[in-house]
Amino acid sequence: MKKEDWIKIFYQSLTGFMSLALAILLFFAIQRMGQIKESFHWLMGVLTPFVYGGVLAYLLKTPCNFLEKRMEAILPQKHKKRADALTVLLVLLLAFFIIYLLLSMVIPEMVNSIGILVNAVPQRIDEFAVWVNGMLDGNEVAQKYVTTGIASMEERLQEWAKTDLLPTMQGMMGGFTDAVGSVFGVVMNLIIGVIICIYLLLGRKTFARQAKIVLYAVFKSSRAEKILNEFAFIDKTFVGFFGGKILDSAIVGLICYVFCLIMSVLMDFPNAVLVSVIVGITNVIPYFGPYIGAIPSALLILISSPVNCVVFIVFIIILQQFDGNILGPRLLADSVGLTGFWVLFSITLFQGLFGFAGILVGVPVFAVIYDLVKRMVIIGLEKHGKLELLHTAAEKPAVQEEPGKI
Image (cartoon, rainbow, N blue to C red; front, side):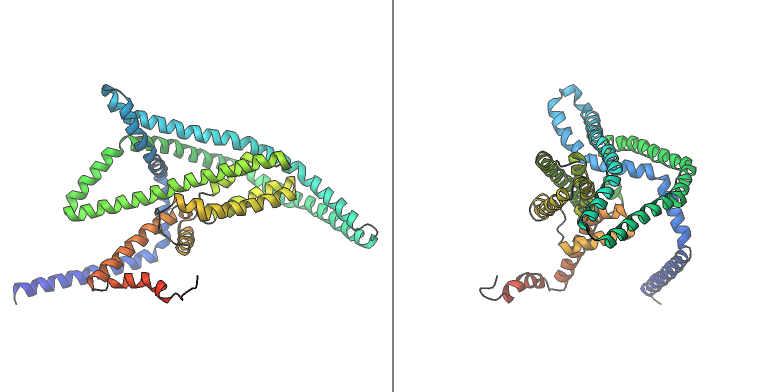
């Protein structure tokens, strides 16, 4: 046999062996999926501080790069090397100040709202009973049924407090040590994460240079440049999405706060700061965020006045229409490039896979996958000489449109 035949047989045998090995590996992986999940959760628990630090560093990377250029232009020549460290320190202080400012506004409002809620619920129940009796004045049979129902409800509440609530509270007190340990663990992970974030921000240029060196060492120059361009596109998509979404949510929260301040003068609108912060923060979540924030805010206002609650719901509907159709598209233009269907699909898919984290990152991740698939389709069409199908698909709706029909 010729040498070429032996080489062909060798590669075919190697391909068959690798396929069989991968099939066996996949079989054992499926059989031990539970152990793999436990190992993955253990590994993620160990690396949690690095996850926190990496996320914080990525979110703060853009303001650091922005301020560093301005800092270098201001500082004298002999201090320009310190611009990076000063920028990181300034951005961290600014981030901590913003968090402190939000907490200092929200926590007092939250405590006040809880106090109002505790005091208002019994009063609202009594007012409801008086209102019902007034409506049924003259109908002794109906009043008797209503009185019996309210008394039964109070009796059941007392029974629930004795049989369910107190044992639950005792169980919670029994698990207080575990809860404190869990909170302590989260705080420690956050502290270590902040330290890791500082290291990552200070060494971001070094890490980027090292990654580029490794990339060019492993791949050919043309392939390495394509990979770098792909990572640049991914970074642009994520930064554009999260930056635009944060700015959009801040504007929405500010508009809501101004509205609540005006209504507090006209109609005694409560919890202006707390409601605005809830609406603004939950607006960061794509698609479902406005509804998630509107429900607890409306319930807080409902305790004060049902009329105020209706006014607030109408305002939220108008505000979200403005945000979804005017403000959001302008701020997020060209950041993801997905239609409403794919946005909903990506949120649903990644929420099922990764929970709340999937809701936050699902849209930009799916946008990157969508762009990759789109480019692969274009390459395939170009390879098979069918690139004109793209232009045909783009022009098809215009050809089918009936004259004079809008």
